[in-house]
Image (cartoon, rainbow, N blue to C red; front, side, top):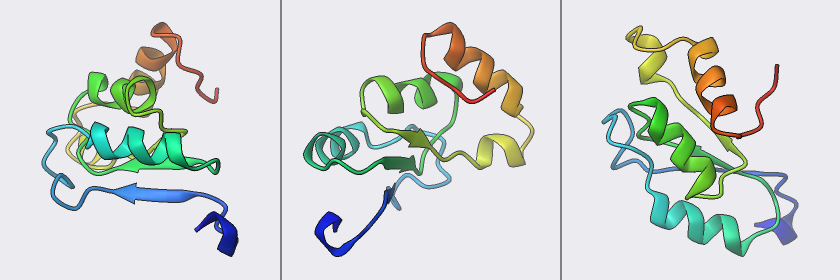
Length: 92
């Protein structure tokens, strides 16, 4: 996809989307280590550790989260604070 001009890849695990069971870290890390453009993890975030794992274990450049916000489980500030405390760079 890179050679066709893709600027980033949104990698969604449809099997995990909305399940809150965590991202598919195996495929996420495989793709992230194979291509040079940014990879956005999507599908499965259920808690703060899942999001951190997307960056640390999955090597994602960004993480998409929806259900955890829709159902009021976490706020964006809580996610950012958690990631910052675990030395993961976040926008302020």
